[in-house]
Amino acid sequence: MPEPNSNEGNNTNQYMRLQQSQLIRANIQNISQFLNTGLSPETLEICIKLLEAGVHPQALSEVVIQIRNQVAAINNGATEE
Image 1 (spheres, rainbow, N blue to C red):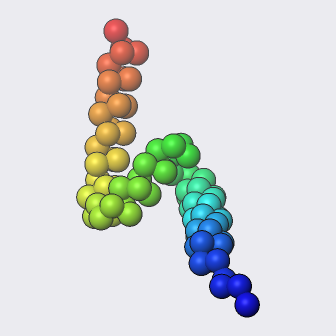
Image 2 (image 1 turned 120 degrees about the horizontal axis):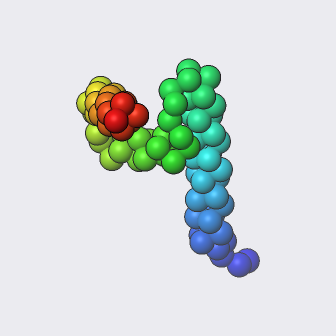
């Protein structure tokens, strides 16, 4: 009787995790759009990766708000000139 190929099991497991990860990220993107966060898919992906790396969610949200405020101030200054 041939031994089962454990590599096949790993590949299937990795594929399932990848599919679940993609589904979860698509759902997070949908929630982000529903809540009108204004985050692009790329920005949202960066935020997700930062959260997965252990960044505190409240700290991340505060930084995003600060960056938005600074960009708005720069844009307002450029349009007033």
